[in-house]
Amino acid sequence: MSWIAGLPERIADKIVPEPNSGCWLWTGTFAGKEYGQTFWNGKSAYAHRTVYEILKGPIPEGLCIDHLCRVPSCVNPDRLEPVTMKENLRRGEHPGNGNKEKTHCPKGHLYSGENLYVRRKGWRQCRTCRTQQGILYRLTAKSKTWRQAYNQREDVKAAGRTRMRRLHQKRKTENG
Image 1 (cartoon, one colour):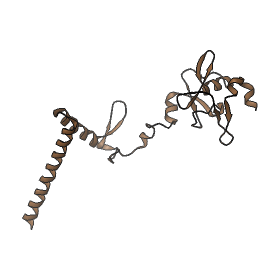
Image 2: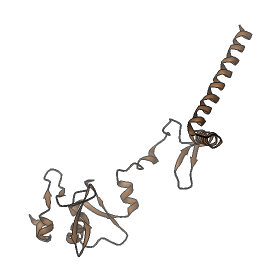
Image 3: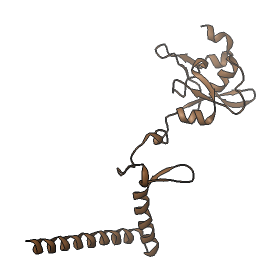
Image 4: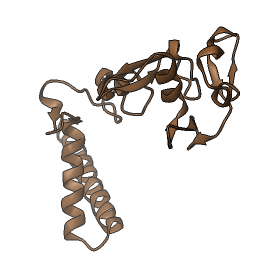
């Protein structure tokens, strides 16, 4: 294989080309669960960075390597691209990605207009939920335990429902 010519034998022996996807899968040791690890130039290094540097040249200062194929064990330099950490995170599949596209909070309230609160770090929060959290926090601060605060909140809700029921019954009797 032509790509082996540029790699040291001890590294090439740990790479298995995957014919369907075009990935070169690392079969050596791993750092954590996903990224290949090798010993290069007297120190431990990620396998994908090592292969990239051997075959394509040095990685520019301040950039990291992005796996375009989204396969962390892939060391194919044609599927690796040096990018900023911000760009790498934007492209990646992590829990924070996709939050900018959300139009509603987890409880279903709209993220817009008067109901949108933007925190210092740019995080968006629903004002309705923020208000409810503040009420619960203040109730918790005044009571001994969270459970007491929760029960107190439920008591307040129940009292409100009872008041509404009585008001509704009163109107019914007056109209009826």
